[in-house]
Image 1 (cartoon, rainbow, N blue to C red):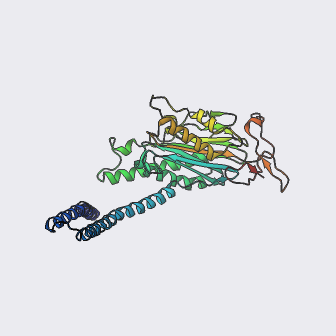
Image 2 (tube, rainbow, N blue to C red):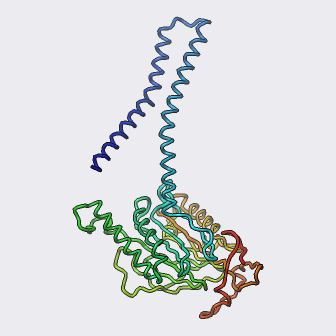
Length: 386
């Protein structure tokens, strides 16, 4: 029944395109025939016959233009409506992040290989939970619109599990189960006779790299990394974090029994974390040189304080300039800036976060006084906090 309805819709669409093509090509030809016939049957041009002929030709030309404009505006209106629906759907799937989460400024951006698409094979999300601020960034095997199904499955699971699971490892297991369900359902849809993904089936080779981060009230950052690049820390310069050996990507092998979150760093006030997908580091220019993400981050972060939105815009400009606008993979960036104050201030006072070059490092194993009592005021890019 579904296939029959699809076939009927396809035939109707073909008939519509044929009718529009006939009108677009037939009307100018018909107008030309009428004008030629008029000239053949009309008497020789005289002073009194020039004006009627010009008027007749003008009326025919105006009518033909109106009909052609109507025929052309129909598809344009449909295209505009389709784009509006697609834009709304993409914003629901990869929705804009809030400008501030629990005293942390957040910004994210994506460049998709598919022209006109906001969503590709990359995913990201940031949520405020009872367990701290939790973030995810991932990369589905492949790119473009074909990877949206896996993106929707992983993001939907994260938005629930981030609130429900007390441990970050539990969130990772929930994402793994959601991806497995998605692959099974996809295999049944594409191969109804098969009980599961066959070895040569595309879904049998589909996997997702995932980086889960949790930032608590003290700025301690914990991570579960499943085959994803480690983030960069922006302070005096851009340095990539080094953590435990990443786990395999989701979908390749089952997660081991002893998965635990790894405490990788502490985000001090005024510093930022930059999460990214490998589309940024794998991008090449015409000569085959890789894009230097660390240099682009250092250039984009110059100035005080660090603005997450400015960092993303700067990296995007540098990346497009390096590749000449010819991307071969989706690129996603998520920047998290610590706007929290170092110590609590008296009520009604303001404090500005000092740049990283003016801060003294906190010795390992010690915490800054009053680090757990922070509230922030101002916009996403504003330096003021209280």
